[in-house]
Length: 205
Ligand code: ADP
Image 1 (cartoon, helix red, strand yellow):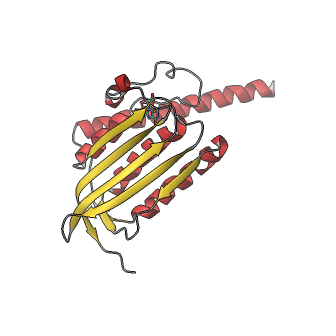
Image 2: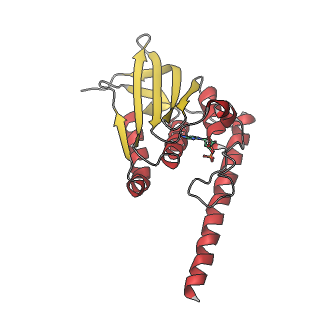
Image 3: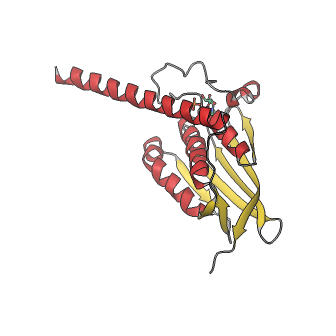
């Protein structure tokens, strides 16, 4: 019957997408670990990058009735970063925030503090009002393949590979920065990225 065929097709599609994600994540992680990942810094409009991310998650956010607010720092300069990696980092962090939040919303907050005329520190925070991460799990989730055991293999929307955060952490570290997590079970989580010595130039008014 057509309805049954449809269900099978959907199942094949879901399995295909999951496998593709898993393969891509494993490839990314091995590339980073074997130092084969190329980092190329270029002049980046960070505000536009955040807007892209908002666009990508627009539909999912609407479906879940969640808000995404991007708190822009005034007078934010051009920053010279590896935009591809930063995009991947934000996709993972915002993706998780959307996945593990049922009420409220997600905030991307960023600011730049110059340390001299040409360089400064870029701080980006992705916060959510989701389920939070208990203290005992907070270190483990940065190890590859660690997921909530109730999630793996279940058919909820929260399926994933357990590789997102290890990739994010390694990317941030390879960019010379660090990633910190503060989270309270039931209240939400905040992932903060600090990238020191980022070159910048002032934007013309
Ligand atoms: P995946 O999302 O594929 O499961 P990740 O490495 O991105 O893998 O995340 C690992 C685990 O960390 C998740 O399965 C979840 O238990 C927890 N986690 C990550 N981000 C959040 C978040 N924003 N809120 C609550 N739990 C989170």
